[in-house]
Length: 289
Image 1 (cartoon, one colour):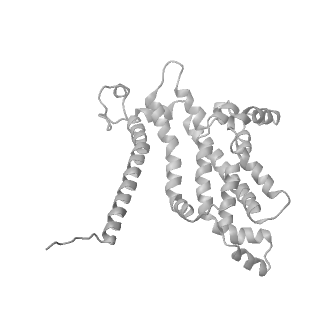
Image 2 (cartoon, helix red, strand yellow; image 1 turned 60 degrees about the vertical axis):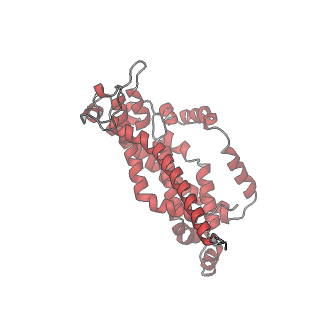
Image 3 (cartoon, one colour; image 1 turned 30 degrees about the horizontal axis):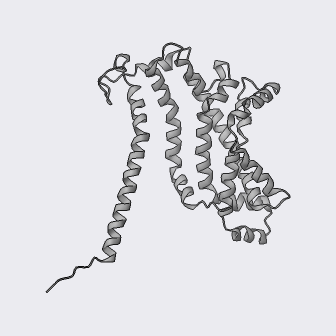
């Protein structure tokens, strides 16, 4: 007498699902460690004494925690980091707000309005994404210099407003919204601007929050363009300002890590407050053409 054993299809499916989830979580854990470990090391190094920076043994937690690096960088008249912080916050905030206004208006126009050459113009804009940004440094610098915007915040803010990615991002989001909502508003007598501000824009909060984080981060971390335009220490932002901590022959790594922590805090705070909208945007935004 032989006994035959059969495996249930449901049981096999559960095993396969468990393996898939395990692989996904393992991959995400590895990626998280790759991202988090440098941040933890940066934070730890900012609280170390200079004598603890170059040792054979690795100490994730400093033997002696000190605020010396933060005191030096905050109290040094030659590195007015408080002023640089305010400058960076102002430039990044103004740039982000203006980009959201321009990108949402342009994205809605490309998504919903029908005008001659719409597809051709939009295709030309998308083609510029494949061009390296350094191609525009010289012509943009010459333009800014001729307009008298050197050493002024406007010289950093205005050129950054031409954001093709932002227009594309908002256009894709507006394309995913059901047209029936806008048609119902049009039947009630709303014009195009009223439909945009009262119907489309309120529904685009997740996309706007995601774009705000992306654009704020790009403006906050801008180094090369700010370095070219802002020469005076009084108007410099954090990124080119902190460059002075690294000399030609010596580098104050403790001070640099303390400055890096100060630079990273606003972005982390912004992400914490807007992460709910970012997740919602990723989950709901369509990418249809």
